[in-house]
Image (cartoon, rainbow, N blue to C red):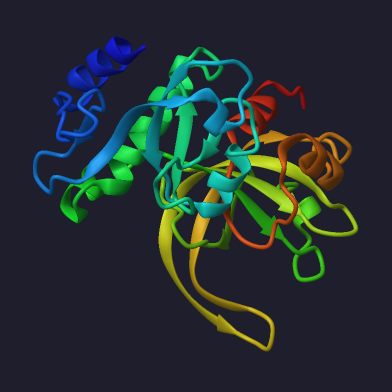
Length: 249
């Protein structure tokens, strides 16, 4: 698995592994050439230290995330752990024993590469992201938002960029994800403020898919995907992303 990762990183980012630790000479680091920041570290760890059954050691790769809530959710799924010997709020350890699909590992390496890049490089390489975006039906008739148009303007959440995918979660009494959309434009000037709501910019969302109110309920998000609150834009764990993509309308 190490060779597969090294080949992928070499081809995609032009980076080769370095071995900087004299006390751990088998631990390769992958880092940016310009700012020298790590975007991945591979370690072999005793299985028992990760709470795994069996003896011996197992490889993990540590990657840096941008969303602590998403990191938390992933760490509850098989093959993922809070960053081992790293800052646990933003680093994630991933098993390299086949538990996590290779394409998902590549995706998270890519996210870590973007999160640790210089600001100049980040503007060029930032990958599209997926978000759950909350909508309060008390303030807006979100259930019927796409009845007369397949593109609407919506409050822009922090970190959301053009090209991102949003899954619009409608609050109580609906309490479910109803729409999948693509962000087609961001940073549209807008100035609104009252006692409960402040809007500084809008984004345009183009409808891609509708979901029935019984398909991705809050109870299902909580029980199956570890999402216990939707109070602001947040990343989408891989398992939920896959379920949302294959779900029939």
